[in-house]
Length: 287
Image 1 (cartoon, helix red, strand yellow):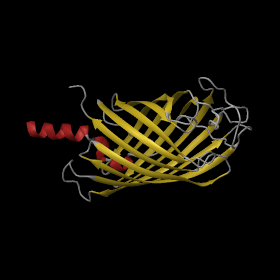
Image 2 (cartoon, helix red, strand yellow):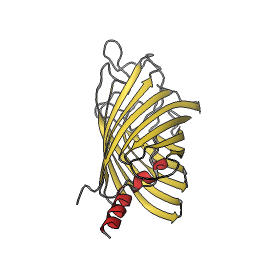
Image 3 (cartoon, one colour):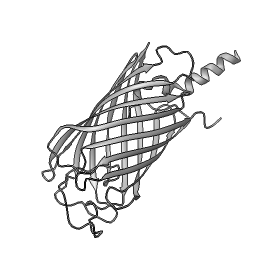
Image 4 (cartoon, helix red, strand yellow):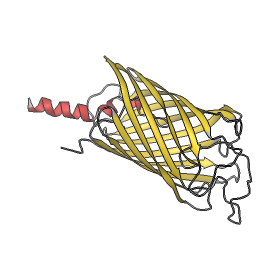
């Protein structure tokens, strides 16, 4: 009996990694991390900066908490050299996701969740020129985001369907952009946008689960879109982001992803980016 209980605890604790093909790299699934668990992430993003031809870098340390089976919280920090000549702290954000619908079947399930995010950013809206000034616009850009570019809030819904080894997920959200700590949004930027995504994940390895020490290999393909809704700064884009993911010992993951634009008419400062992420999860943080 004791052995059975121990196995049950392990299965529950690692349930977030059993359906590993839902651990999307560029979006969040409707499923949550296990209750009473803590996750630590470090995401590095590298951008080809159109305005200067240089490589921009953004670092995103993140702490995640599975409050219970329905609610999870994230706290994220941002630091980069994209708007400055050197890497500096840009601000942070708070993210919450609440799963309000679950339908379980054998080898399949369906989840829906609502999310909200708020960011406070201390960044200029134009990159620094050679003399350090930010008041002259050296390029055309109409894209804002809450990952270091601008302060603001967003919210939306996520729906995720697991079908054996394949997981499909879609997101629809709205973002409201606000002034940064020291800079106001320029008049020709849109302050509102609709965000949408379609993600697919497939479990390649292991072919058959034998134990939780087996390394998981997952492949992802994600479509990520945005439409600015104000007359000022109007435009849309659709990006594609293939990714590969490794999960070790059911607790630690490594993500690699490349993102590039498929279509769009929105002037942007970067059309291509590369992501590398390391994440470690600690289960049963409270005995």
